Length: 60
Image 1: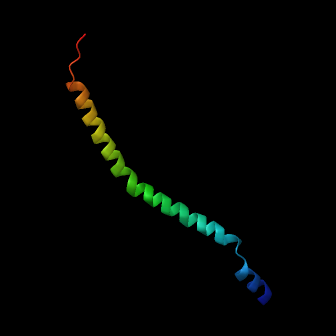
Image 2 (image 1 turned 90 degrees about the vertical axis):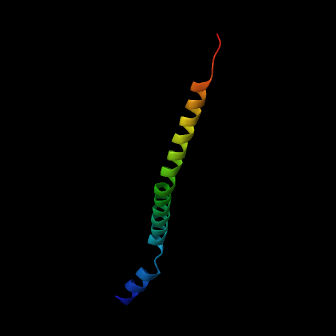
Image 3 (image 1 turned 120 degrees about the horizontal axis):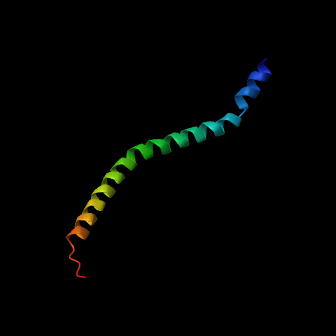
């Protein structure tokens, strides 16, 4: 029984899965924190561009 416990404690196969889980979680949190401000900025920029284009006088 002790040998099985020692083998279980030395086994590192699951450690890689935990690393990937943590990495994926960090990426998800960063996406949630970073994307909304970027989308807001892009929306404001596109409104400015649209206003600029609308103010142009085209002569045909």
